[in-house]
Length: 295
Length: 225
Image (cartoon, rainbow over all chains, first blue to last red; front, top):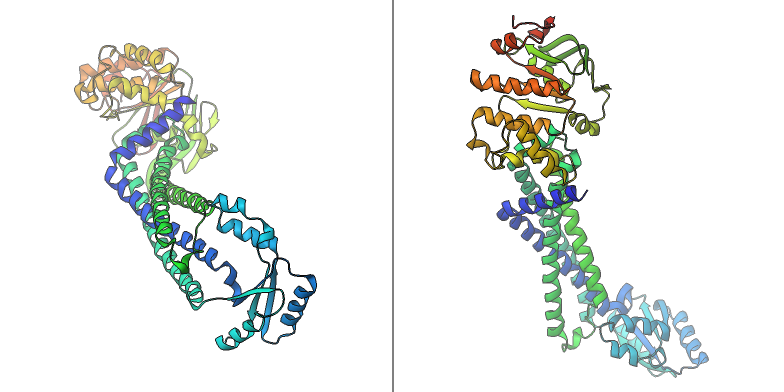
């Protein structure tokens, strides 16, 4: 068993070395395409995080005092329900605010530890039924002076633009990445085909003396997998570095102060990138092996 | 050990390579397949290790009906069959030792059997001292010995030889035939396709003659024609 495994590993490494140029080309293509995929995901996460309060048509949020009485809260609720200009309103409790806070500040543990749910204001998120900005701002302002209300915060024009533009940007990036991923799969396919051709004598002898089909296939499959994974690792490294640099660059830009991508989201993106890389490699190699090995 | 029952093989639907061939070969027999080029000798050989599939009839090898054999079992059939060829099919970048070891390695034999079995088989074929050489540094006869070592290192039940002396001069051929005879005496069934008259006439073994795909003669202790 050790011998079998050793053989597959040795052959894989040898093939990768023998084919440096082609292998490099496929790895680079995987790296570029998966960098784009990773970047698109991180952008998506960032926009999600910064606009979390404003998704689904929410136009303003009424923040309440932490010590608001039940009657005051019920009164605001009734008022919102009664208003014909309000399509939907959603109460966000202190506990829920804290959950959101924990997500946004997951990378700054000292904040999370210092803050408890009690110090965060509960709120109502309001989706108006009209699109007119003046009417919306008048509607929101009406709640400003009410007892128990701390402040009313409106979705800014920039946030709305961000939501729209990031959606389009993501779609474009994904489309380009899909084309590049396809190219990467074809390159891996071609690399494996070349490797099979270079070793056709050995394969002939292997079949002759009774090597099993899987024994012949595995080194080539592994070769494709390694190319995919290596490209994905490079892609992930690029995305990770760019994310850190970008995070530092925009830290003090007011509009982007909520634009963070937390570590767990970066990790998810990384896992996804590696998985995609492995899949591309395995598929490219798998097709080549089935097509050209004839075993 | 080997049995063909009414086996036919056609290429491109009209070229007949083998027509209604029936042969029964016992364990330990040495059989010559003779006949002019294109008479179906190679097809006969290739049918036995399932490189070709018959269009009609049934074939048993080592007690198994190989038409019924599922594809994933074919490698295990081939481990019971050693093959040698006119063009040796050695790997040019590997030494004599590595060429033989390769056959053990790729069928997943434990690593430790290689250093014990490879030198022994190279000694048997008379190449004990040339194990480090590359194939192109050897004579044709020596290369064929390497290929015999590779075919026999796994101690197969059957040895198939397709014109093994086709590229060799008569003196060298005699040496190869002595070796095949020795292997046959260990109990290995040998089937050899050839059109080397002097070899067949000297050895006086069973002869199966093919002519345009049909068996025209099956004679124990036969001669070429």
